[in-house]
Image (cartoon, rainbow, N blue to C red; front, side):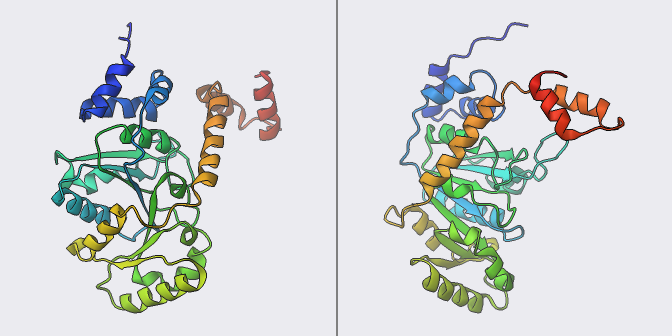
Length: 304
């Protein structure tokens, strides 16, 4: 079957006009690295003034509920919102395990909200390997703000700082004893902290302790208290997100360089046939004297 040629210029024009179908099609090309993706990305004209807000934090902090509440506020302010929700991945089919779009069903059919759920596909930094490219596609569309909810993998979840204009770290009052462990990773990338579920016992004490620690070790970083389920405290957080005068992201160049390295690495690995690799390993893994390192050398040399 002959595939119809994609008119990239027309697709980009439709994306800029707010055509949701064109946007979904472009994101699918990019996420799955389908042939027009490279040409599409090179011709894109992302609106760099569209703010990207990263929502990160440990599992169970209520990130999805908070994103829902934030989206409510933005919709009330008549802003168009794109949400990129990164989910854990099945190790077998690389599909998303949780499906944030189900948890965000309230906004699924809202005309001013676009939700895309993507899988990490083995990436360890809380994001998908295609997050940067997909964000550029979203920035080329007619959105006022873009929210990225990371997967919630813990201390290694720092990649979002290189892609977002502002990064918000969501914690809960029970995280008080974990602060010393968290701070060496996630704490260093956040430009604002949210103590969610702030109606729980000990929330005020935890927030005060967090503010004190931040004053001692970092610049002036805001701490917000929210109860996302009841939409309490969310308005002030949204005001901060849209404030262009807040602290610049001084880690962005370094983390973008890391992402550029990953993009270069991916292009050079493009010719590796993973299906063939799996098939060969299935046949050889139980053979006598099997050695993975010797196998890799032979595979790279084209002997297998």
